[in-house]
Amino acid sequence: MIEAEYYWRNRELRHHVNVIDGIEAPTLVLKNSTYLNTYTKQWLQANIWVHDDRIVYVGEMLPEKQDAVEMIDCEGKYLVPGYIEPHAHPSQLYNPEELAYHAAKTGTTTLVNDNLLWRFLLDKKKAFSVLEAFDELPISMYWWARFDSQTALKDEDALFNTKEVLSWLLHPSVVQGGELTSWPRLLDGGDRLLHWIQEAKRHRKPVEGHFPGASEKTLTKMKLFGVNADHESMTGEEVMKRLQLGYQVALRHSSIRPDLPKLIEEIVEADLPTYENLTMTTDGSTPEFYENGLLNVCIEIAIDKGIPLEDAYLMASYNAAKHFRLEEQLGSIAPGRIAHINILREKSDPHPESVLAKGQWIVKVNEAQTISSSIEWEKYGIKPFYDVDLKETDLQFSVPIGLDMVNEVIIKPYAIEMDITPETLPANKNDAFLLLMDRNGKWRVNTTIRGFTKKLGGLASSYSTTGDLIFIGKNKSDMLLAGNRLKEIGGGIVLVHNEEVLFELPLTLGGVMFDGEMHTLIEKEKELKRILSEFGYSHHDPVYTIYFLSSTHLPYIRITQRGIIDIKKKEVLFPATMR
Image (cartoon, rainbow, N blue to C red; front, top):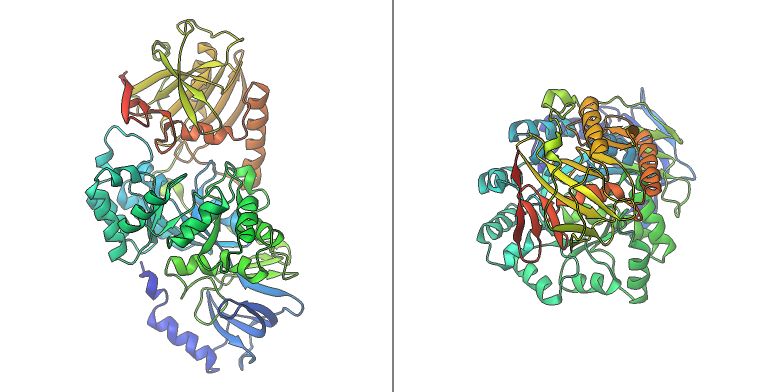
């Protein structure tokens, strides 16, 4: 593993200089280019030389040696840096490799990713091996070091202790600490969390917060503790306040919160004089939201809503690179940078007709290039999952408190006033059985959920925050059938009604990720949404509802490994039951 600040070895650097001296030839020249210089915010004319994965020259000259050089005439085209997604959750049904290739096809050639997936699925040795495998992709893949599990685990200290957290922070592919969903612990005197933040800062890595609705007082305290960035602004006023306090602010446009148009309208109206501390993020959206791309969509919105053209591109490239201290590698078309370059038809059209990633064509004149999968998942123990049998004895429901859906992810408690002991719950009620079961079959938590379905017999899912098993339904027999089918397909999501399997989505990579192309997954997600809507799901994003059932950074009640938890009081209302 090469340290991030020394991306190229000395021998390679000598080759790069030899290209300038005419001793060696570049591998690619983009001649007659009009490119965006991110340092002067000007569109300049240049010939751009690339040697393997690096930009080695930007200027008027053409190379002396041109034998075997790929010469591309970019007359009339406009070149901008590859886009950077600064806040990716790379396993929302898709797997990180497929997300990376899908993103790159529309110009997003760098992703900074949540590492939570690896914390739950792999031991550290295998996880670090996976990170090294991702370094070999043409897309640049960087990672966060999580400080918390985003849920209530049976034994959180086994995963999130000082030794483990600091080993992740020190990894060269890890560029930040966070996102800090456990920040209330900091306010409550959590010195261990404060120590981790300070260690991140000592190693010159920023810390990202997660502060939805936070007051000025809270935001100020978080700055004093050392937090650098936040992506939870829901209004232009909140954006402005965070900027004024010194935060790097990511404007979110996601499947749950497509806020970007509103946020930009409000900051433009507020006459924000500079955009250099703003980035944009799609915040780990579900597959269908990515049908037309990632940051290319955000740039289009920014331009349409009045962000100056050059600033819109910088918000999606250089600003993020600078924040992560990667500006010597990413975010600009300049000598020494990784050759991530998007070729546009027009300045104002951020959807590239050609994409270079590490000097390799991902898309060439609107034709996606064939790139073979290189991640050998089974090598790291990521394989089909689910060897647990759901039994009739697991489907015993008696607790008096259920989960009432306010929207996709906000859930309130409610008093269960109906008999929940029968085999089937009444069709005229919105209540359904809800069961969370250990992926290793050791424990379970039983309750009900209101607002997810009016009539669906059974849903089984190995896709969840922790990879534990979720069962929802009105009929116990259908839930058992869904569980059996889930086991047969090696994990995923299964829908059953009246003893008929209506839908199945195999997630054979650890039970949480799809092993296939994004366009196939997008169509499967559309089908899942359609069926659940027909059965009474009235919100927009059922995938996130399933995923966030255990997420304790959201109000007001959650079902977790420890049991049913009151988030505000931080109390276990009903503990998990051993099987």
